[in-house]
Every structure is written in structure tokens, then in C-alpha cells.
Length: 164
Image (cartoon, rainbow, N blue to C red; front, side, top):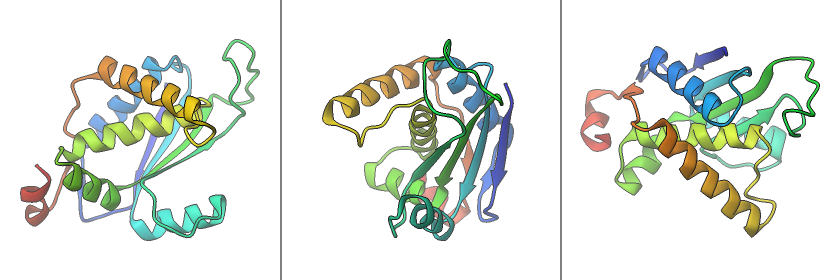
């Protein structure tokens, strides 16, 4: 499995190998070990622009997922590519959410990455309350499977005190 990682922010030190390895573990946990994944860490302005353009929602969000193929059972799928899709995460939003929830940024990023990958696999919490519960349950299963969470980023010194 191949994971393409692009970091569009210079303010943070991203442990890219750890992030890629984590994404590979997530793909394996969801049964997509043969798939490729594109992952991008961006700022709030970029994710807001993407959200406005593709979801018609003019607001910042934490994670967006763009599947490359329709989500159907893997045994039925006849992919023209092994690319599962793109996951885009707003790092500043993830940091704010982690601070607000009182949890480490690495846990927040891991949760967002699992959430995005599940969207690529066809889960959609916005479809119905039942689907939201199904997706939440699957997220918890995957998070437990891939535990422990590795260190993914090193924040600037003034933010490090708040995030850790």
C-alpha cells in the first residue's frame, strides 16, 4: 500500500514517516491493504475553500474525504486504480479541537484520519442516525486496533504547552 502525504504548512514539524505508517495501519485495519491513499495537511483557508467548492458549505471543517471510486463491496469493485481517495485535514482546526477536548493533538489527528478513511470506504454519518452510529462504532474499532497513537506532529514551542 502506498500513502502519499503532502504537508502545506510550515509552522509545524510533521513526523511524516509516522504519519504514513499510521495511515498504512488504518488502511490495513479497514480491509484496504492493497489501496493507495492521498493525504494532505492544510490550513483553515485551504480547507474552507475546498469545503465551499465541493460541498457548497462556506465554512472551515476538520476533515474532508474525496473518494476515487464509488464505495461498493471490495469483492464487487472493479477498480481502474488502487487509489482509494484523498483525505484532507486542517491542522489548525485539529489543534483547536484537541485543545478544547483536552486531548493530545496526535489522538485528534488519528481520529480525523480514521474518520476520513471510513468516508472513503462508504461510511457516511450524515446519511442517517443509524449510519452515524454504525460509523462511530467502526471508528472505535479501528482506533482500538491501531492503538497506541504515535507522535505525529511537533507544534511550535508556544503551542506545545497548550497541546500536550
